[in-house]
Length: 515
Image (cartoon, rainbow, N blue to C red; front, top):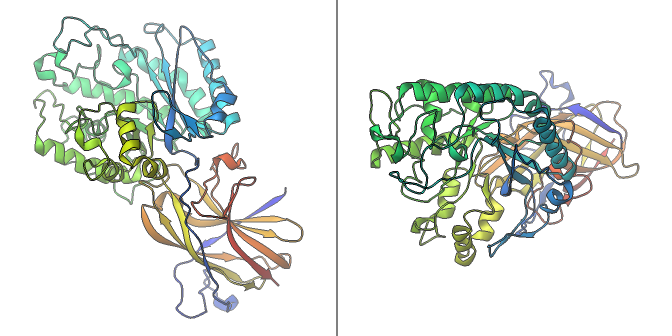
């Protein structure tokens, strides 16, 4: 199908009468149009949508690589049982542990890099995206040490090796960014959680010196994060495990917990502060989520964990997370507040911290409680964004060479807005010929935050546009040309009788006449 693409301009305001302002300086083409109110019915259905929801877990090792299988990944887009779980999920995200177990002192092999490319191809074929995390060990070795269940040596790698590996991975990550939703920092410590580390400071009880991280520990960690940010295209975010890490990265090793969160004016840009998100791998596991909201100190300030630290870091992440990608997993069922409301606050916390995704496989004891407690259906639907068309103002007739104005009243019922750029497009499809023309809209879908809002746009119709009747549709495709035409990567609205599965368009259920 041949699709013409025409840029639109932003419509600033709607006049209370039937007249709409043109977005041109010259108002000679101001046209009078009839307001047509179109209403929509909200759907209660759960369905797959890109870059959000419960992810499927996978792992592989450098010593024994198992390549991802496209048909298996594609099956995740259908409703699937989860082992040891009482719930089923749709998944468009696949978490991928890359365990660099046999290259802790050597370069990554070309075979390993080629296998990563095969994983990316499988994801692209299947219509899903990956969340990669590169680590050196994902094994806890018990022994005679303060923590007991895991003891040194942990098995991660030196900074020099980490930086050399990131440099090797950069071409693969860059070339396949279209099917990478985001990447997690990893590399440092067991599980890549920046905690149990042989080389970057041991933040656990096994570390001694009150488990405080030194200035050099922080500088080394910052260097790794900076390298990974540079290894990814500027339009992709990197997640860190602890909010204080982002503060220390941006403001230095002495930065206070009261450091300013990301401002909306800087959000969704290409700078480092706009590209660092969070993965909380112990969501609602304890009062401070097992060290998520903790001050790890530095060479002059001891480690601190108290109510003030907790509240300050929570407030920081609550504000910052509105503009960056947040995900993670539950990890312990021993904390009562991770239950459904009113006994717990699972949904409240997911909304407050703007979660876009969670692990479908871990911890199923917690997730099963959400199923039995009655909030799992809401959580499945509301992770990330969930856009609902409420009503629209669309003209019945448009004169070629004039400006067409539309208003969409939308609700985002989800916990977050999309974190990767998408250019929204208004589609006009000729009812006789099927010819499609796409107009780029000015709105930034990443700023469609939770709650209700208006999308107001003004679109210049070319004077040579073909006359006829046109269906009006809305398209939110992926930004990457390699997958932009794939319906699996387009955002679906949560409305009845709107989604077109074959095209990835959302029907606005209105036909206008062009003359």
